[in-house]
Image (cartoon, rainbow, N blue to C red; front, side, top):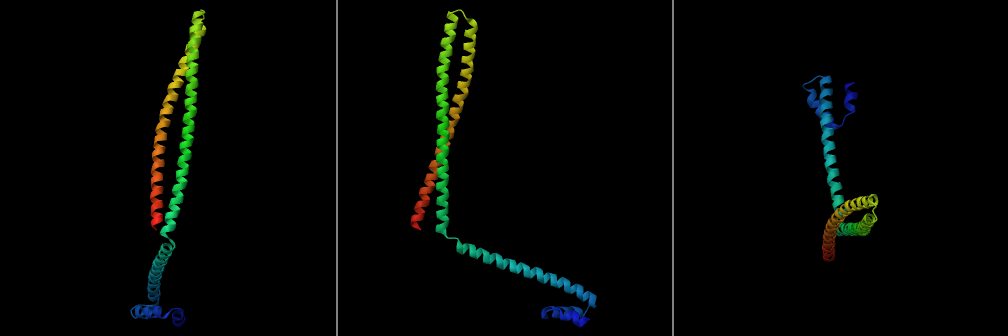
Length: 180
């Protein structure tokens, strides 16, 4: 039985078992063998893992070409620049729409003022009050629109700065590409 037990192990394992078995009973030898075997396996797995990591890292480094990386970055920058320009166009369009709406409101405010005056001249205080109320509502809306337009102008300035930065980065990257 001991021979069959020993027969299943490698030479290194047999040497370990023989050394341990000189001082211990067979059950203790088996237990000690299992502990040693686990340590060997863990050590082996760690070594294989480290070798794999090192090889994988070498492969990635060999695959990574600085010129390809730069080209990819330039493509990304161009795409981002395109998005920034589209964003600027969208914000500028919204600003123009709000400015047109503001212009329409200014015209309506003038009309309500005239209507209120005409209503008072004709003795129609109820119509004059309604026109004044409509005018005041439009003045409030005008104030909100002016605030929105001011906010949009700030956004446009920020987007313009981002665009200029992106263009600078793109020019710099293109110069580096020419050097490579």
